[in-house]
Structures are given as structure tokens and as C-alpha cells.
Length: 214
Length: 214
View 1 (spheres, chains in turn green, blue):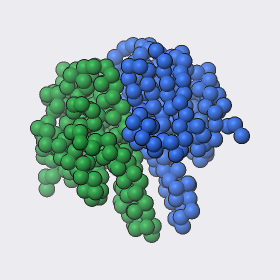
View 2: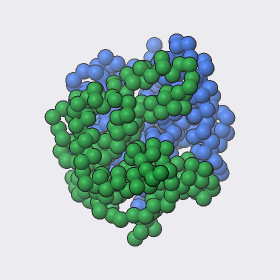
View 3: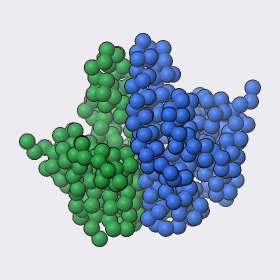
View 4: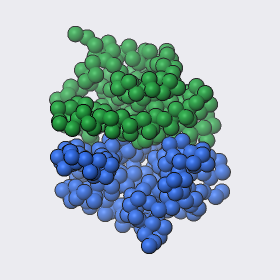
């Protein structure tokens, strides 16, 4: 079985690991699965060949001979299910909690963080950008504060590292350039704990090698 | 086994079915599971008793004696897994595609739609609100256009109705008050197809009875 994912041939972040293929690379490294990468350009992602893989013309996608998937959350869940006891605990209730945190990451924590791109880049030259920025930051802080309370003295969101942590840490990394993580030392430490995992280091290095070339 | 979910005692939408408990009610109706509802007030959702159920102080939550969950996506997935062949197809690859669409709904289609609340309500009295509105609408249109292309002549996102449709239709309903759905007749019809399901009608009626009282 050969796993193939798609990623940008040149990520907009220049190799900071914030494009969503890094999340999938990380999951594959955690379970020890090798994978191939098909690169897609910013223009090519709109072409019929790629839209057939991803209806919204985005990355990443995943195929393994049995299934063709898109959306990093669904891909990571599929990888986790193929390797019981790694990214998902074997206990059904604990597995359901891991899935709860995956959805919390992408539907409760990430949406306000995505607005950093809107206010700083998409609308960065608009007259309201400066005045809106603190409003956007406050909406992110409201989520981070709750998450920080939950983590308190725990290493991970539940008893062990799961796909929920993988997704939450990946989402939090997108808030780090704003400086917001430093306001929540518990979260800054949590993110560093995730980045220190050998599987993350390998995933980061792989995407960096593609994107940081001159 | 008694299933208990939480919902607002008075939803901000006044019974339009846009609060996320409706998604969970719909899933429970599709699989034929009765459920109890614990109501939470806007003030009460910040209290320790509710934060213990939902770390971000939101609704819905779910408990059934075996698991305690939050996040509508995770709850619906759990319900689907307890009733094979209803909201998830029995075939593993088809099930994985249904999960792909659940994540597409909450992480690709819903984030730009959530910005309607920001521009119209949270920042509705700001001087930039009028000028920003068309920018927000255009970012939603970009997603809806792709989704409309994918659906084309299909009744559902894949061969049969799945939890992916349930979540996508629930997300699209939040865009309807803006008039955007009417620009994409394929999507307007798709949403109506979902609303016409008896399970949706029962779920809508149940939340309406709570929220539309004087």
C-alpha cells in the first residue's frame, strides 16, 4: 500500500510548517507510515485534475489505494484508525474524547485564529485593519484562555497524547506569530511539548526541505 | 441507556434552528434515539458546572452513561458509529468519505460563514461594517461555488445521505438569512432536500418549541 498526499510546491508560509499538509505528515510519522508527496502549485490547485481530488481546490489530499480523502481532520482520523493504540486510544470512550478534541481544534479554536490572515493579509491594506486587529486578537484570547484553564497542569488534553493534541497543537502554531501564545505560558509549553516529539520534528523537516529552498 | 444533551434555554436565533444542538437533535432523530435535554442559560454556560462538561463554555454536550462529549461534529460521529448503516455507510471507504465531508463542513465551509456574525452583529456598529460586508460575502461565495459544482446533479455529497450531508446542510442553513443560498440554486435545493427529511422536521420542531415561546 502506497500512501500519497498532496502539498503545495511552495507554501505561502515559506516553510514554517503552518500549511495543513504538515498535520498529515506529523500523523504519518507518529504511526510510522512512509508516504509520497504530489506537489500542487497555487495555479494548479484550481485545475480539474486537482479539483477531482479536492472539491474546494485546497491541500492536503490523501490516497492509499483503498480511499481518496481530503480535509486534514478526516485524513488524520483515517490514519489513526488504521493504527489502533497510536493516535487513538484503544478504549472506545477515550477514542471518542480524542475525536471531540479534533473537532474542538478545527471548529472552536481555529476559526478565530484564521481571522488573523483576514485582518493582516487579505484586508491588511484596508483603513480598518489597525482598529480591527485588537478585536480579532480578543476573540482568539477568549478561546485560548479556556483551553489554558483546561490544560492547567496536564501534559495533554486527555490522559495520553492523541490525534486531538496533534490537531490542537497544529492549530495553536498558527497563532504563535501573533505573540498570543506567550500570553498563555501553559499553552506555549504545551505547543513546545508537541513540537519536541520526534515525529513532529521529522514532519517539520520534510516540509521545510520543500519550502525553504531559495 | 439515557442520552442527555445540553442546549440553550433561549437560543440567540429565537428558534430558527441555527444553534448547534439542532444538528445533534437531527442526528438522534435520524437513528431513532430518544434523548433528554438539559437547558443552559447564557450566564450559566460560564459556570463551573457547565465548563466541566464543555471546556469552552458552549453547547451542545452529550452524555450517555459511557461517554461525555462536546463539539457537535464529534457527537454526531459518535451517534453515527453506534448505529451502523444509518448516518455512516457500512463500507469503510464510504464511511471515511462521510467523515471527510463532516470536516469539510466545519473547517472549510463554516469558518467564512461564521464571519457573517462578526461583521453584522459583533462589529455591526463599527464604521467599517458596511464596506466589509461584501468582502465577507465574497469569501463565502468562493466556497459555495465549489460546493455547488461538486453537487451538480447529485442529491447528496456521496451516493447516499450521510452525516456529511447532515453537517453540511446545517452549516449552509446559517448562510441562508444572508440571501447567499439563493445565488446557488443547486445548494438551495440541496438544503431544502435535507430540511424535508422527517428527522430534520422533528429536530427543528423540538428546538422551536423551546425557543419560539413568547
